[in-house]
Structure formats: C-alpha cells, structure tokens
Length: 66
Image 1 (cartoon, one colour):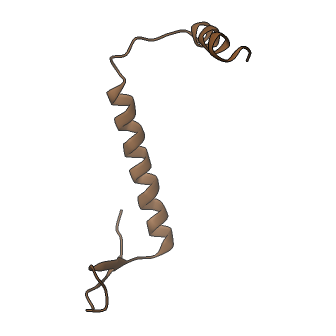
Image 2 (cartoon, rainbow, N blue to C red):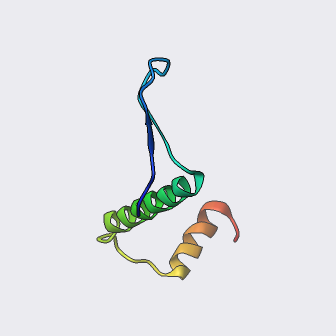
C-alpha cells in the first residue's frame, strides 16, 4: 500500500502532524483491524475448543434462555 502524506511541522501545532486522503486512512484502518484480529486468533490458538451446544448450555445457565 502506498500512502501519499503531507508532513506538517508548523510551530502552531503541539506535535508534528501527518495529513493524507480519507480513503487511504480507511484502508490503513482496515489493515490495522485485520492485524488485531489475527493477533487475537493467535493468542487464543491453544485454548480448548468447545461445541456450540456447550456454549448454549453455559449461556442458558447464566442468562436463563437463548
């Protein structure tokens, strides 16, 4: 992915800023969300699997119904 950026360093800003087109921002955010999702999956890879029936049973016990 290539991003065109404009780097601002004017003294009126407290910190340096970068400006780039909204569509490129959206693409970047989607990319970061995908990375977060993949990390979540990797972190949970070694957890035991449970069936949908077990999940439903635990839900019913906790909340009373589906």
